[in-house]
Image 1 (cartoon, one colour):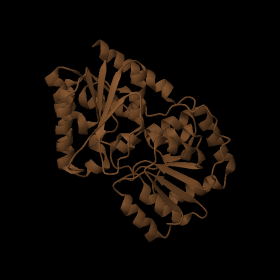
Image 2 (cartoon, rainbow, N blue to C red):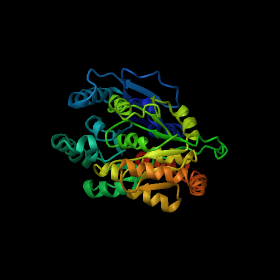
Image 3 (spheres, helix red, strand yellow):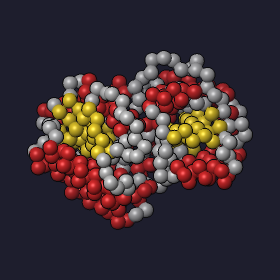
Image 4 (tube, rainbow, N blue to C red):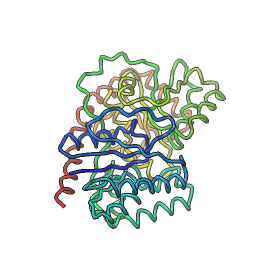
Amino acid sequence: MTLLFTVTNDLTYDQRMQRICGTLSQNGYSVTLIGRSLPHSIPLDDRSFGQVRLHCRFRKGFLFYAEYNLRLFLFLMKTRCDAVCSIDLDTLPAGCFATLLRRKKRVFDAHEYFTEVPEVIGRPAVRFFWGMVARWCLPFYRHAYTVGPELAKIFKQQYGLEFAVVRNVPAFQPTPTLAVNKQRTTLLYQGALNVGRGIEATLEAMQYLDNVHLLLAGEGDLSDELRRKAVALGVENKVKFLGYVKPDDLRALTAQAWLGLNLLENRGLSYYYSLANKFFDYVQAEVPVLTMNFPEYRTLNTEHEVAILLDTLRPEAIAAAIRSLLDDPATYQRLQTACHAAREVWTWKHEQEVLLRVWRVVSRG
């Protein structure tokens, strides 16, 4: 069975899609992942599945999404396939129309609650448009999955479609990392430097922390603004912007961190019900997490207490939580020991079985 997967990002850094496409290709499917080319794109690594980048004149806004979906539609219309999996609403129009015209199978993979992300929720017209895309297209879909149980419930209620849950967890790393020399004062944030990620509050919190360093691995819409903010706050010597980091290098970097940060603003249901891959990446590296007291993380923390849960994103609260761990090695050790147990449970080995079941049903249907 030949499968096409569609995203709007640079394929190099999309670990979830690398895992999904790699698993399916290793289980007998012919897979191609389609994304876009950006000015900073680096050559793609060889993988067990095909990779294609589409070039667009526009880089953001309505014109980008219109151009990308048009180019993607034309690509899907001429490329051999049995099924197309559209990731999130921003690639759904092209995937839906192409598969309807070609009478191919279609699957939807919701990485987030697209109409509830901070970039959309404050823009009524944009939010309305993507809501209409979902209402127009998803009635034609029979197969779908998403990243967490809470989002699956919401989507079923909204669209009347059953969503399987394929969590965004990493592959198990067999080499124990408890022996890794953790840098006691190193905080790590990995991911996009975008609005709503709590990075501004974290930079402000650095004013209250002595002999603590923050590493930011990623880039995004706020990259320049955050760099300026670090200078304005006088914390530029405590903060290091690493830019884009390839997944293999990021795993090695994460293993050396002392504390992982996953601090989201409650600015829409997408973040409130999120289940970020970085949370699981930290745990896999046996790095305790400072995260928000949101439902999915609260549930996970009752299974394995790997995190300190924050009720507020005030900079003083962030700094106080970090200081409490620095001053209480016993608590830190308890969290790290819980990571050691959880890393064997929250792994891709288990999630891939759900993924393969979904695609077996698609193949039969």
